[in-house]
Image (cartoon, rainbow, N blue to C red; front, side, top):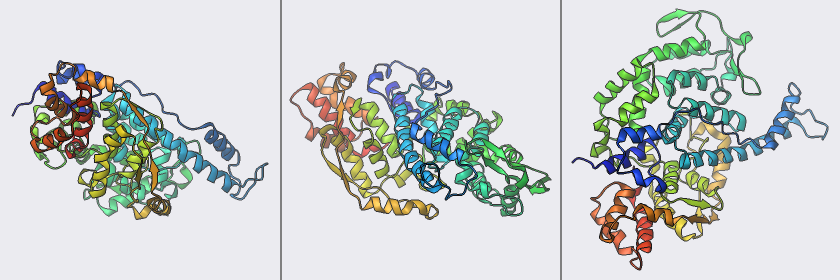
Length: 490
């Protein structure tokens, strides 16, 4: 079955971005996929998202001034260094929440939809937790700046970031006492994938990464006094290798291209029906292009097979994708924007706080009986402003013991919330202004779920639709379709 131009564009926007925005619906029929992709593939350098509060900046300066002092050393106010660090962590965590909200707003409103969408992918690929706002926003800027650039450049920049070096314990990686954590994750999670290296490769690569560290201000530094400059054998090659040499070896290995393309294919095309022939073709091109991400994504999105019906509506939206998609479809003002973080965290995806070093598993892991019920009621909660309860999912990584106590406490803390949103229904109504009344249900369905064969679900929505006026019909039909299992798919 061939798709209409509108269906192709809706599919493109749902995968290369976060779905169609109500204000942009006028071009959904007229644009070709090539033209539409060009409009959302803006790759100008992104602005740096700085959400570090003045309080965090002041405390950071105080900590830098106390550099080298004992933890118990007091300042003029009588506060110990330990107390000041605690205050910094508290304020930094609040700043990271504000950074999360700022990034979500960009996902909703920025024209560079592809950059923000693929940056969300890289955010999961280079999974990292750090409760230092300065290091966290530095890593986010690296990812967003390189999201559609060169994978090798991004890999090297991420590997030298304070957040990642700290998260993977490379400050503890010293000659004669190497810590293998950083080297292992670079190979297993960032480049080759499990099974494409030996334990000896890990041990020797860890020696190459000794001394890779960062200054308090986040600048990368190689501490030569703890770097192992002895001969090492990695992937069958012997030499006095350093960390940059290891990263170059990984990029020279075609398995890296294959591993990255496989993950991108699952994320942007289909995570249940994997076409290995297409992956091999894409990996060959990706490798030959010296890891040009933009070129790879253009090939995917402009290929006929990307629009095969089996690739449409086959992926479950992540919690962040779901919330951003709703906001694009229903332009709204939120009195308390933090409610977005309540939903995403409650559904299992907290930005800048992945569950473990492998990131969010995605796919069917997004859905269970409780999370599905929450997903289905979110649109009506937004519309009706009904008070509700929500608890968050617990962290599943035993390595993150410092977080578990707080997460368990939150599980018992069933707070009550109200969304307090003001929806711009006038803009939504203009989407269907040229649709005849008898075709409204089909057009609303196509616009929201890009399918027209959900007969049983359509009957359910029709049974609850408000027929008192055209506006009431559009409003109730829209909320009805957004409250269906089909809307959870992209």
